[in-house]
Structures are given as structure tokens and as C-alpha cells.
Image 1 (tube, rainbow, N blue to C red):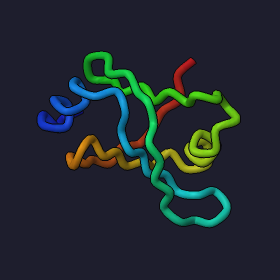
Image 2: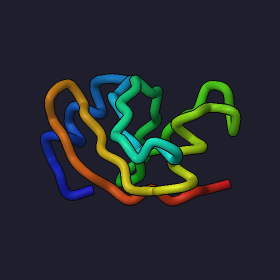
Image 3: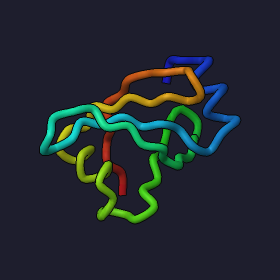
Image 4: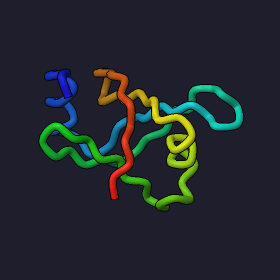
Length: 81
């Protein structure tokens, strides 16, 4: 993660706004999401697991945008088990 201000804000909060592309609509969808920051890795936490709609959208298109209280960045998500 190269964005110092974003990383600073992520260290202060536990929720971000996540934007994904709808797998059916193709439109941008923004939703508040819990996360964990571990060094340079940002782990998104789907509260309802694989049933979470944003997670299903992310599987279809891993391009995401995060907003941590006004500090924004785009990433490509990768699944971890």
C-alpha cells in the first residue's frame, strides 16, 4: 500500500466504504465494510461470509475502491484463505 495518508486513516478506524462493480448491473455499488489492516495488507471482512453481496460482486470483478473518511484509493483484490 503506497498511500501514506490512507494507511494512517485505516489505522484509526475499523470501517471503510467499499465500492465494487455490480456483477449483474455493472454499476458501482458502495457499502460500509469492516476491515483489518496487517502491515501492508488490508483484509476485508464479509460479516455474512460468502453470502455477502459485495463479496459475490468482488469475485466477479476484483477491482475495488476504498474510502477511509475522505482518503480514497483503488486496488485489485486478491482472495486469501
